[in-house]
Image (tube, rainbow, N blue to C red; front, top):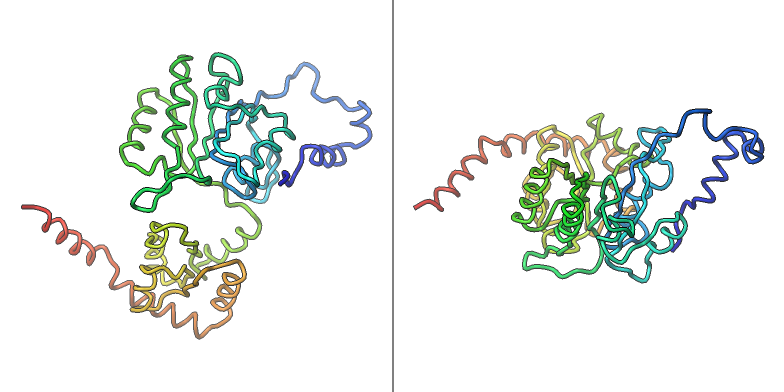
Length: 323
């Protein structure tokens, strides 16, 4: 699998937009006399695996080529100078992407952070511990090595007596004690450890987001049940849309099904795919009778699913635990 936007292809388009033959012939200056271009922070990328549309793909492409942000072309503000990949599947992209963009691919996290030297040589770290083949625990959680990545990076920072910001894709760890240890380490070193998700700025997503912002349809909460924790998930936003009286589309998971059988506040999809989601959205937006019925049921269910009612259940639960 090759990188969908190559550096060479991007360069050709940039030349055509910014002066074409004049720039290519050296007739236009590459920088204003006496002014150096702004220095871009150097970043080390640590990934569990890198394949088409993986988290490594959708996050790191924003560091390598321009992207759309709020509808505007945005240049990467950072520069990937080193990469480490933990696994190389058959559809691996790490090797090819690093070759195309002249990024050294190192066999260890320590070497990546030092860019082959002896001391820390980057200004920030992006760790993407999502996807790959790893064992599962008894709760059905895949044991991604996010804490191990962090510990290896922190070891290099301590040895170099220099600490840099660290971005962790998704949650910090599958274990609370590991996540807490990462937060405490960040506090001790007075550095930022962030966790979060990739951007959501594609045109299709933004088009759908306009319906959500207008209050016409709730966020589409669908996923495939890759593991037990997915199957038994129940998003907080599910209740937010009920309170707002906004119908929504969800996966046909047990928790959603149980509530929907009692109140019918959503359309449930079994084994959702893009075609099924599009069909359900069109049905919800075009079928006025269905939409009105679901909206009315949301308002009725909103009187049931309130903190005042749920607090009684929570207190009763804790009372059973107390002697």
